[in-house]
Length: 353
Image 1 (cartoon, rainbow, N blue to C red):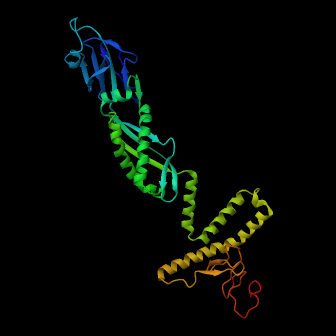
Image 2: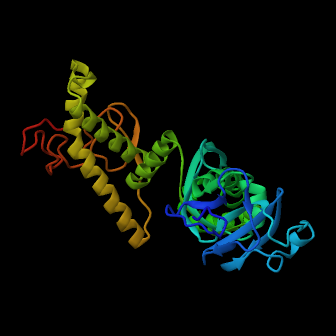
Image 3: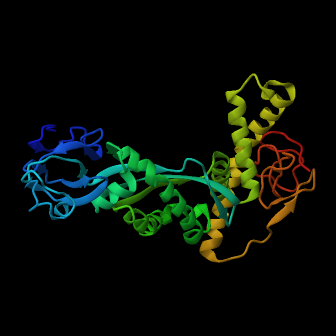
């Protein structure tokens, strides 16, 4: 940037300055005939006595009454048009500033159809450019000597979050449907905040939502619900939880699983696990066969012979007490085939009946 009275121009080596004032402090004397050079990606707002008198587009200008017609009525030229006057020039970058980040400093409270009140965090990116340099300088920059993209990002972040809060309530009912709403929320968000940006002389080019996430405790509930959907019914879900307990106990041998009670439970579950897995596979096969044939099941539940709890028909073990449940004509110990006349299992010798 030349600070002399002959040439006035500015180059931004950082690429982050939206507005740069010349001179950086106060005003300076500018004589008629001085050269003003505005680059292709710039506009220059000319100020005198605190007023914006004109905006120059890219090009080279000689400061005179011909290029500054508004100045003519404000200046007396007692020295043949050569007297200096106190002025300043604001160089405004007109390029698109990309990859501007926005995000929620505090979680947004959202009324969810499945989880009642939920706090959500959201973040994304946007890109902007100055569309009205004079309006932007007057409303946003003020008398600052430098205004950067970081300052603009901070200025508009709260506007975006405020509009997004309203959009979530209008567009979405449950956070379980979040992924399919990202594009719709992004488009609606851009349309909603576009006018907010325009009133400051800024054009919103792009607006994207990268993620909207619930708190960790809500995410844990969603993960458990997903697990329940995978395993099917409640009996299978209890088997799934038992398997998880065994895994956690194995990773923490010095904890409660190391006590006598914990060890006994672990051994019992370990003995039951093959039957649980077999039972789950049999139930899945039966449901698939039923879906293909359209036939209804003969019996949905039976009573456990030990604790009398209602358990799924065909279960090998009771999910309530762990008791082995044998089907008619089957050894309760090894599940080998038997006949009604046999008193002991021909395979393992266990007593029958």
